[in-house]
Image (cartoon, helix red, strand yellow):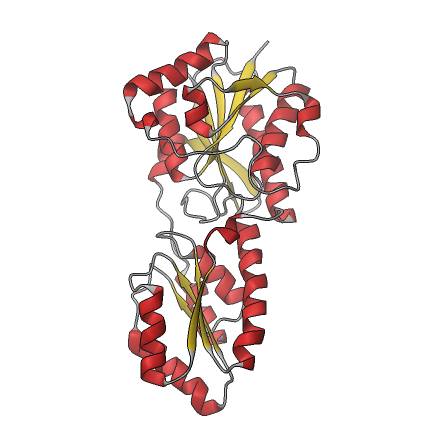
Length: 321
C-alpha cells in the first residue's frame, strides 16, 4: 500500500486545512495510507508523524490556521537534520510528501527530493508572491479581510476628516495592497514595485482637502521603503490634516477561508494525490492555477519564476480613485 504524508510550513494561510482535508481524503479514497506531520519541517525532524483517518478531517474545511501546526525551522538548513527528516519518512515506508506553504517552504522541500522523497508543493500564502501561479491559497481570503477592515476604517476616518494609512502584508509583493486597495476604493496605493512619490501623496491629500473630501484612505504594503510611522508624520506635518495609521499585521492571516480559497484548496489537494497515485518515480513538482486550469510544473522551474506585477491594474486603481 502506498504511503504519503502532508505538512504545512511557514506562515499560516486560510485554506491550509482545506488542502489537508483534500489530500488526506483523496488519498484514503484511492487506497493510500496518509500521514500528517506536526509543526512543519521541525516536526519532521522530531518524527512527529501520525496516520490520518477519514474522521480526523471532519469539521476543518471552514477553519483558518492549520490543524497540523506550522513552524519555521532553523535546523532544516543543516544537512544532518535534513538527512534525519528524510530518514524518518523512509523508515515508515513513506516516500511521497505533499508540502503546503510559500516560497521558503518550497525551497526547503527541494532538499528532501534529493534524498529520495517525491515532493508535490501546494502554494498557500496570503502574499500571492509565487510567480508561476496566478493565485495562492489564502490570498483571496486575506483580500476580503482587508476589504472589511477598510470599510470600518472609512467610517471613522470620514467622521474625523482624517487621512488613514492602512499597512498590509505582502513582503516584496504588492498584490495584497493592489487588490484590496482597488476593491476598497483607496485614494492611493503604495507598493514595493512602484517607487514612492512623496509629492504625489501630498498632492492627492491636498486635492481632497480643496474639493471638500472628508477623508483619505492610503493602502500601503509593508515592503514599501518608507516606514509607515514616518509617512504618517510627514503627511500630517505638510498638509495639516490629522493622519493615523493602522498596521493590520497577523489579523490578515486568520479567519474562515473564502469559498474561492476552499475550492482552490480542494482542487489542488486532489491534484497532488493524483500526481502521486501509482507513480513509482521520484518527482518534484509544484501545483498552481493558470486561468481556470489547475497545472503542475517542475518544482525548480516554479521556484525560479518571478512574480510579475500587474501595472495595468495599478494604473486603473489610481484612475478610479
